[in-house]
Image (cartoon, rainbow, N blue to C red; front, top):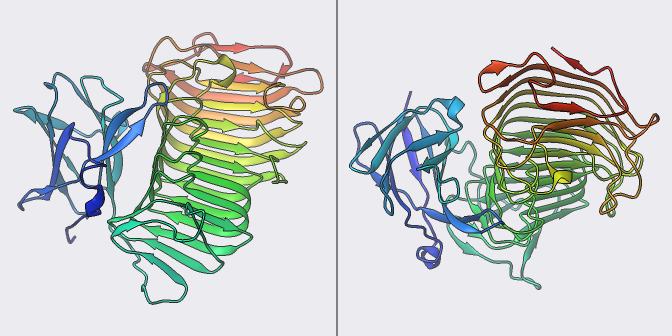
Amino acid sequence: MAQTLNIYSIPQELVYTNHNDDFTVAVRLSGEGWQDLYEYRVLVDMDNPQPSSMVQFDFSGRVEMRVKVNNQMIHQVKIRPLEKGIEHTVHDNIIYFSLDKPGKFSLEVNGDKVRNLHVFANEPEKEIPNPNDPNVIYFGPGFHRPKDLPGNAFTISSNTTVYLAPGAVVNGKFICNNVENVRFIGRGYIDNPVRGFELTHSKNIEIDGITVINPDHYTVFGGEVNGLKVNNLKAFSCKGWSDGIDLMSCSNVEIKDVFMRNSDDCIALYAHRWTYYGDVKNIKVSDVILWADIAHPINIGGHGKDNIIEDLIFTNIHILHHDEDDRNYQGCISICVADGNIVQNSNFENIWNDNIEEGQLFNFRVLFNPKYSVSPGGGIKNIKVKNVYYTGYGENPSIVEGYDNDRQVEGVTFENIVINGKRVKTLDDANIRVGEFVKNLKLK
């Protein structure tokens, strides 16, 4: 197999302003010389926003990495997700490790999860469109801002491919409204936009390979989109309402191989909200890494208008962090239905959860939240949760609870819940509290 290594450039005007010197990072193919990577500064954790670091490159074959820690002595190193089994060595305050497949990782020194190093090792690009193609909007290496007033957005038409080349940094959101067949591809960055992608009343939208850094609001905002694919998206946020992927009344969605570190919900699925109407169906989320500095990694069902939210499949989910002070908004997996919604016929399988700072593993409730709801939820039916692995302590009890006899939780099955290496045998072992109006709850 041929070995390749592609390093990204950075626009000259950003070299100093966007750099973080906590780490000095280099990468190389086996037997070749080291190549320096640009340590991009990304802000994380709304509780106390601090500069974290991010490096990125494309490769095939096998690469070696060298991470010099500049501002502290190394006593402990973790490379998460731990399930990936990345081994390392330390010599002279430098960390060495190798990668033989693409992946997304958090390298943490001395337990510091805030000023850590995010490593995004992508596979090589499969498609580089022709910049002269009339159906292509091509952002080459360099810094780009919208030219039209108010100067914060690019509006995209149907049947368009938007390409952000490696080394392209765009300061502006992308808007798709009443369009179809639009693709956003490449390895470029969207830095400090109002939002990353605003997708409304549209069909067949694809996002692949882009990185969104510190938007004011959502990374991906979707309203009434039918047919959405999100692949290899990386995102950071540290502001209020800066959710990751929030979808309202969207169906036929595939989210795969994303890394979301957000100071609000990482992935939220709702029905009706604002000017978006309709049920939610056929959502597939797989092979993702979620890090909620604030709120939920996964949040489902909070907004609607007597809607059905169904056929959700979440599989191979790595949750690196969950921290939420307010009990109403806790849960690594939260199905808290309101506004007459019914969430049903959905599966969650192969979920790895690291230690919860403050929060719960599961929060399955039919409720009325006066802050956001107009009515109680309709119910939760036929939910299967299988192969959940939690390593941690001190989390709040999980909750399963209906609202009344007409708005119940029915047919929830937990199978193979493993906490600190031990498969649980009882609901008490799993730290799950069952409230009223719950039927046919099973633990296998």
